[in-house]
Length: 256
Image (cartoon, rainbow, N blue to C red; front, side):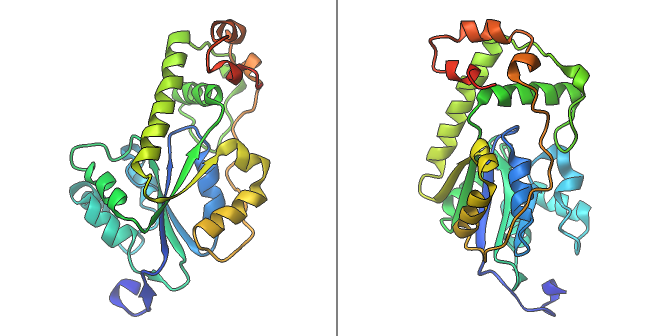
């Protein structure tokens, strides 16, 4: 109805992106933001493995056509279908974007478009404990459980390779810095997953202010994954801790 102008819409809302990498608590943050009645937050639009779930909100369109449109004209897809004319009740529109999304030769133009869109706000989500991130990713790869369900207890403990772990730590820091610099001329809200968990009310209020939303009491509907102590979840925890002693990453092994 809105697309045929039977209902008056508008574009005067806050555009934004939730920028992150996998296993940083992005589903929890999305769940929190989606509980706001005046916010329209799409999922991982450029995650090719989630094509069915991605387009849940395009109810007035043929999903196959939407997917093809995104593949062929990704920037036009964002302009005309994502940041489209919205009902007057909508105060903010965004989607979740991982560092690795939209990196194909055709989709890479998405990043240029976002960088050039100075009215676009960026919520940059990170995680302080990269060891927990690495462990979470390795478990998800083994179980193929990425969100919502608890990991089976029999998966623990898991052994982590020292060289792969070190490479993971260094790679993540480089990715964070690269994306920080990429959007340095935007309005950016950098937040850590651990801080949100410590004070959900505080960050709910600040995120709403950042997105120019009317204040509402927000809530989280996505359950946390397993919180087994690292020393129990990683079979060679103490071996890794010893090998990382004296390195910038040693403090990651002090939190259990």
